[in-house]
Image (cartoon, rainbow, N blue to C red; front, side, top):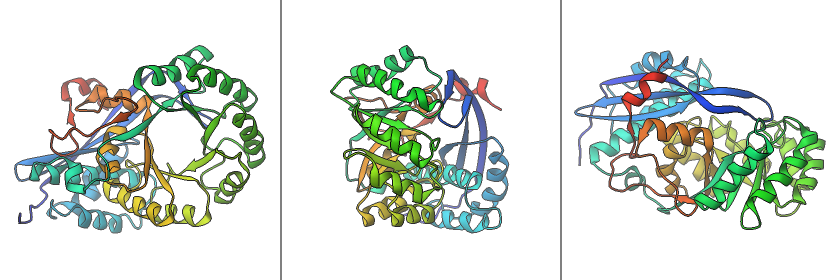
Length: 365
């Protein structure tokens, strides 16, 4: 049995990557995405993790969190995770602190797997080695032609059986945009919509009926994910065959527990870059198993992949246009879809990702 390996250094850097065209959803718009990379060294090995957040968390990572985990056993990431949770008690565990912890935790699991020279999925155990994905984008800033081309391409070129579009910026136009998307993907795929909390309960219910006429099978954040009663009301009255999903802004297991107890969702979402990394993701997966509710990973598919294999009730991962583009730009080993699914590369240790320093340099903040 390998003895403990003390954590030596924790570094973090931020990179701002412009979008390939303007992007918007039901409640905000953006023209760049910030990735914060963490690298942790112990012995002769190092591991990396990352989150999509704000560059301001670099200071929290290299200061408070680094001092918390330095000297702890790299072979026990769970203990380091617990120590970080306690350290940020007075800062607030949610939001930026949770994102920072998520990146550190992911790097620790990558480091441990690299010490053992195994892919992370082998370290975690697995229920599957093939993970379904759904194409995601369809931003409200897109023209009808751009919307149809992107969603239709995921079905035709990557074999996705499910694709998702954004709604909510202009509710009166949403039924039209849904019709455009439905025609583009044809009858061989399912259409999802994501309002990012833009609607009221009554708006959401009215539009759910209209969306249902065009075969929409998934209504994500029809109302704010903080409005659990509102989510439950939409879920109770949505058309048969339409799942209500939410959870991407769950930063703690306590929030997910409340969402599941309330009966707010048909499918629980979570984001490994926000919920506490691999440790938090697996805790949430256990809650979903206990409540007989499927889990879906939100965004960051390359970082989710190995942990998703270890989740018993996983439905799929989100193949989010913005993050897929960034992960292929900045990481060697980012997964490529085949027949609507991605697979861990068992020939590469850890989560199988290597940061492309030269390619990333131009985006450094």
